[in-house]
Every structure is written in structure tokens, then in C-alpha cells.
Image (cartoon, rainbow, N blue to C red):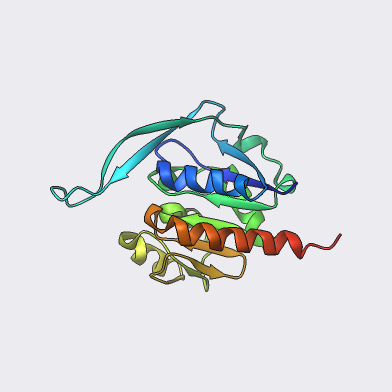
Length: 189
């Protein structure tokens, strides 16, 4: 069975995390959640409030962790998912997150980036020359990292699939599964 790795941490956005988590399972894949430790990840809910200039945040569900970053054997996985929220801004500073992310890019394996998830590969220079979607306020960061930002709900650039955030999940979910399935089906036996 194909297996995806969901790379996350505390303050990941709940819908950005849970939708791909369940969608890949619905598509017949196994998925392992990976974080800094084995402690459950505290997800957050981001809402848009007309009385606030930015989104507002409240605690969401807790997500059990299957494997800490330091123990991830990248060879066990066929695809990588990096959800958004605030988690990407701090998980990207971890050496194992870098090791994991660089492996998937180096081997052209499927990678799904949701919302702020693009911050992780961007900081390592992995989006240079690539097309990506992202949460609109970080467009400048992605462009400074050498990416071309496309304002669409389901941006596909080879093995990379991305979206702007949880409102894009219907289109993104379909595109993600097409990219993931295509990769697995084209792998030589």
C-alpha cells in the first residue's frame, strides 16, 4: 500500500491538516503523522472575522503523532504533505524537517503544500523556478525564494501540488490525489 508522510507541528491549521489526512486515506493510502515528539499535535482553527485585519485563531482538535521527525525513514514513504497554519514557520528550523523535505524534492516524489506549508521548502531554496500557490499574504516570501506564485486553488507543477488554504480543499484534494496516484502508478515494478 502507498504511504504518505504528513509533516506538521503545533499550530497547524485544522482543516489544512485533517482534509489531506483523510483524503489520502480515502484514496487507499496509509498516512503517518510526523512531528517533533510523540505528543499529540495541537491543531488550530483559523477564521476570518470582519472585525479583524487578520484571521483569528482558536484551539482545534489534537492529532496523534505516529513518528517523530528524527526517526522518519524517508524510504518508507511515497509522498509528503505539509499543511499550513503557523506550524510551518517554526518546523522549518529543524534539521530533520529539512532532511525529510529535501529527500522528497531530490527524488521528485509527490509533495502537497497547503497554505503556509510552502514556507518549509521555500526556506531551503527548493521552490526556486517552481510554480506554487500559497496563502496570499506570503506571496512576496515565495517570490523572494524564487517561486512563481499562481493564484489558484489547485496548482500542479510536476510532482508538486499546492493550494492557497482550506477554502480550496475540493479542487486541491482532487489534484493532490491525481499527482499522488500518477506517481505511484508510474513507478517501475
